[in-house]
Length: 80
Image (cartoon, rainbow, N blue to C red; front, side, top):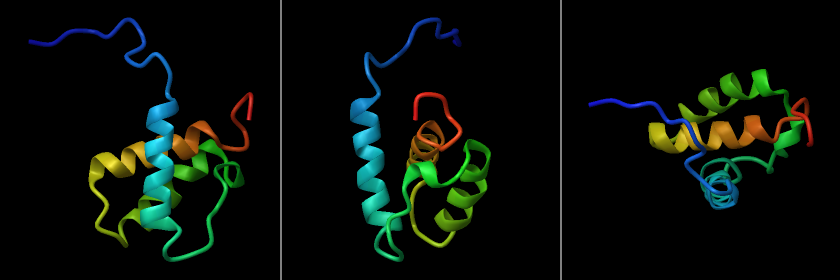
């Protein structure tokens, strides 16, 4: 059975973004200085995160969450 999601699943993304920041600390900041999410554009973050993620044992789901965090806080995203 499949269905369409027509309303937001989360009331607020804050908990998800907090988890993404933990992932950043565990998988990214252990190898290099922390890169602010607003360092790259939304389109640049995908390849950057994938390239770096391939060097770690991060799960596909966690990499997707981390990538979405970076993209949602990218320098060319309105409100950031």
